[in-house]
Length: 172
Image (cartoon, rainbow, N blue to C red; front, side, top):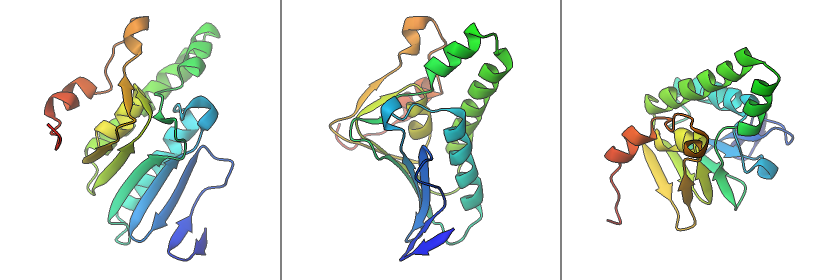
């Protein structure tokens, strides 16, 4: 880790998630633009590790999650990789991916510090999972949400049906 002003950068430029601490805020920046930040196993691991590290860190008072891509917050789980895994009969890897994704959603829902997501642009499936379960959601006018799993017959829920019924908006 290297220190730069009030930021501590903990990931390389090649990683799909940038993690840092800025002024007592743990910052998670999704940065896989060509895939519209579709979550892959590496991304899930980076996010989980950062949240775990910050859980007891008194220097981190809140977590902010956002995208570095102006087109998308997160286009869900990497369905292409999951489909390829099924076609190649790598059932265990595909099951492990969804298990990690859903466990991360549960961890976010129970996170002991404010977890703030800025939802700007496309947000689908797993992107709703890593944002809607947080304590605070900032949704911009450019946000476009969907659950495309419906079209392929997959169970269309990363807990969003539960969360959507309980969200309280300030704009009516």
